[in-house]
Image 1 (cartoon, rainbow, N blue to C red):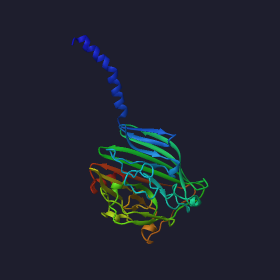
Image 2: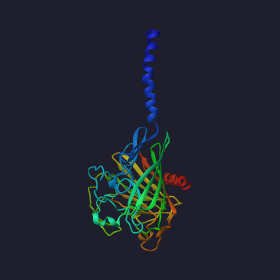
Image 3: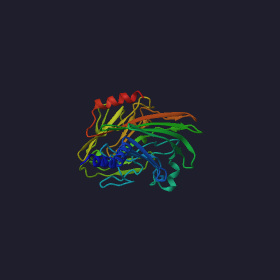
Image 4: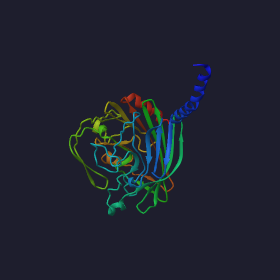
Length: 350
């Protein structure tokens, strides 16, 4: 090929090369896409889904849904939004990752869902998305700030919530850091000790504990929910707390963190919730159930201690409280105590 033809081909390829380079750069790192009509903000990393902040009217609260590993594996239950074969269909209010509570001025925010009969709705509160206040994303992280209203059935706001979500990815490890500020509005707000709280995740079936018998769980209102015994094929989950407690024994104990370890297909996974020393009730009690509810609750002390401790936390009108949590999602390996303690020390200084 003579020099003129070679130069011509190079020049011809430049626009395509420029487009390809621009596209790759645009897909590198974090990106956030807000869709107000669909009531969601999608968080992407390298062009692939990380998670989404969603607030459809039929959920009764905004949530992060679904949670995924770096490989894209779903680690939260799909039902009731996107059912998958073999999943449990109990507790319709358990969706993705959320923060709410079971008794605020006598109202149950935790258990509210479309399954509650109309005549009982007067006993339940709803968390309404108000606004997306800030979205920032770059190669290393994404940050989302939102405002929500905790409302009584009549529509009046009891608590104003301002939450910042920080999303990062480091090799095989994904992190979600949550900083929530709750402010009492025109009246005192009482968080009466209750087992239903505070930050919760509903797990994929593979990350549950193996089921050996059917059980009935009763919520704060005395309403029973049947949790069936199920096929344990490919079910591999096991809790381990910072205090060395494992399995179902983690429930109702205190700890700085809990590591849920398991495997989906051939992918080892750790899902960790880190408490923060600045949180009320630290170290938190764990409301971690083998059937797939993974929750940290620092406000239910009377319930978890069998009456030995009582908190009944309150906010006067205008007062605020902050809660900080960090979620770790490890793909390809289960995290050791030493690895988690290192993350905890870093998070404790924030």
